[in-house]
Structure formats: C-alpha cells, structure tokens
Length: 536
Image 1 (tube, rainbow, N blue to C red):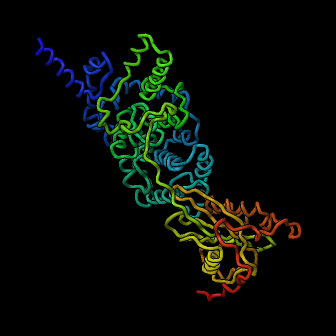
Image 2 (tube, helix red, strand yellow):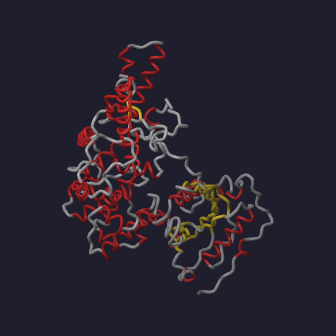
C-alpha cells in the first residue's frame, strides 16, 4: 500500500511539472490534471501571417492563456472597445478609405507620429499633415525642408525624415503600392520596425498578427504577472508570442487597437482603473492585489473565516518562480503601495548625457524696419538633422566666460564669413531642453547690429535671415523657440523691446552661471575677432 501511494504522489509531481503551474492547498491537484490547450494547427498558423504564433516553448503555462481564457479576453476587449474607443481622425480615415494604399499610408503616418508622443499632441499634427499630403505621391514630391517644417515641435525628428524616405521608396521602387504584409513592410520601408509593420498590416489589410507597444506590454505583463525586465530578449519574445496568439482572427486590426486603447486609458502606468477593466477576472496582478488586501485584513482581525482563507489559497502561483525568466526576480519584493503597478518592471534607465551649447540670437533691422534673425542649418545627419537653429556651438569641456565667448565669436565668423555687429554679445541666460538621451543646456547670448549683406552670404545656402513669423513657420527645434521666448521675456527683440531709456537693467549686467568667471571689463571689442573673407 505504501508503494502504491508513493507512485501516485510521483505521478502528481510529474503532471504538475508538465503543466508549469500549481495551486496552493487542495487546488494543486485539480489544476495539474486539467488538459493542456491544443496547439494551433499548422495551416491556421500559416494563414495568420504572424511571425510566430506559438507560445515560447520554455514559457511556463502560468504566464500564458488557455484556449478558454483567450476566447474570454478577445470578447471582453472587443466589446469594451466598441463601446468606449476614442474618436480619432486616423481611425475615421482608415474605416472610410476604400483604397488600400491610401488607408495603409494614413495608418502608417499616425503610428509613426504616435511613437513617444501623446495622442492629444498628435491629433493636430496629423490633421495638418494629411491635409497637406493626402497621398504617398504627395509626400514623395515634398522636399525634406517642407517635411521638417510640418514636423517642427513634434520631436524625434528622424521619424519625419524616414517617413519621407519611405514614401519616396514606395513611389520610386514599388510602383506606388505599399507592401501588403508585416514582414514586407518591415523589410522594405526605412524606419519601419516590427510594431509599426504589425499595426499597419493588421489595421489596413486585416493580417492576423499581433503588436507590442508600451501600452500592450503593460497590459500583458499585468494580466500574466510578468515581472522580469521587459527589455530582455526572453521577455520580449514571450510578449510577442502572447500578442500573436491572442489576436482575434476575425478583427485583428480592431483587437490590436483595443489592446493599445486599454493600456492608454484604463491600464495606465500609475493609477490603473481596475474597476473599469473588461478583463479584470483574467488579471493575475489584480488577483495579487486582492490577496494582499485580504491578507492584511486577516492580520488586522487576528483571525479570519474559513471562506477568506479558502479564497487566498486559490491564488495561483508560478511553479517555477525561483528560476522562471518571466517572474519577478527573487530580490525584487512586491510593493503594496504600487498595487498592479508592480508590473511591468524594467532596468534602471541609463543616465542622460549632460551637454552645454553656446548659442547666439543675432538680430538685424530688415526691410521696412522689420527685425530679422540669423538662422543656420544643421548637418543632414545626426541629432536634429537638417533643422534650423540660431548660430550655436557645442562646448566640448567646461570653459570660462571669456573662453566661451571666444568660441561664440569664432562660430559667428565661421558661419557668416563676415564682420559681426559693433557691440559685444550680451549674456541673456540659460535654456534647458531634454532630449531622449541628452540634457542640453543652452547658454544664450544676444547681438543686435548691422546685417550681413545678402550678396556676401548668397553662396552660403545653409544660412538665412528670417522675421519672427517666418521663424515660427520654419523647421526649427523646440529648444530654439524656448530661446526666442527667453529673449522676448527680457524685452530684447526689436518688435517687443522697450525704448532704451525705459529699460530697467541692461542685459549685459546679468550674472553668468555660477562657478564661471565674470566677463573681463578689458575684453577686446568684437570687431577685432572678425575680418571679412573673400567669396568662395
């Protein structure tokens, strides 16, 4: 009899290991004896066009969905989406546009703009963009300068440049027709990654393929208690496998948009609206929060009912938690104050690089007495490629005020090749602008004086004088607009400046940043640093 019992217990353990998860207490055997979900037929997998719709072979079942759970999730999310989705211009256009190429183009533009940018910001940019270039052919015929002007203020400017390059490739190399699958979109169009390709293919063409963006990552990690760093290859692969296995075969585009909408409006990063979630019953993170609350209540009461104890024991846990590549690392403790926001987790962000740039707002009196400002075009490659800015120079190291101003004078002479105004540059202040990986501090100076003659700089195509209105319509980075606003606040600009006798304080009296030497009163005049150069 003892031998028989031993064999039975060994069988239970084997079944538990095959299943990949267990229940606390008596529910362990019940869970272990349930049937594994059937593997999707090969023919069906081929039809979907997804890169890989099977769950990763090493993914514990605790972090996947059964067939029944998948069906429940699809119905719940789509029903909620039909009732609660936001009315957005790209959705209206995609639903109303019968031409597949125009539909794919409209979705492509929206998906590129929405990367790293809030929906409320994108709406106006998208509307203006589509009004200017309603088709791929229209965009392909535009100049990069025009594209940069339309993109100005949206940030991450390489997105607009690659969108322009992609439109030109479709028109010139693909006969004006967008690729029809996620795989071809990713292979053939510059700047189109796995997410954008999946979004365009599913929404525009109905390809049954999933998408994984920040919102979908958050939803899936909370639903299946995926607590490992989501930027690691193991977690990334698991999330894509989940997304591809969950996508609804009848409404792939709507399902993908519904998952993203759920993450953007309900399953938000910090204050999730769990009470409004259509799949709350499938959410392991929410179950953990409820367990934590129930445990705290039991401790407060010092004793609990049998019903309470039973509900706690039914909370499922990953059987391989100690070695599972998807679970919270052993050293990371559950933070009760965060609730479901314990998921997802990612590694600490790499500190941004600190940089300083000296820049000069140079004003001249243009035609009819209208103030104009000197702009210089940045190189066509690198950060802010092809954008226009005030004459600037990145400081390679910490400099004294005098050294800094010498750099500025050299830069002005370099870009104009002509003499500078008679007066010295005045320090105005600092403008801090945060790029994705750089904390940039602009040390702003102001010059007002005689202009450089047009014929003297005619050969310099990367230099122009613009009015304030032209400046605001040009392809200038947001940082340059901040700099212009700083000068306006100091009442320096010609169109807003007060008469000199009314100025309370000359801007030159403003102290330089702490830790730097003050300007030498015997400093040479700016004219001595500039000499006219011959035309090239």
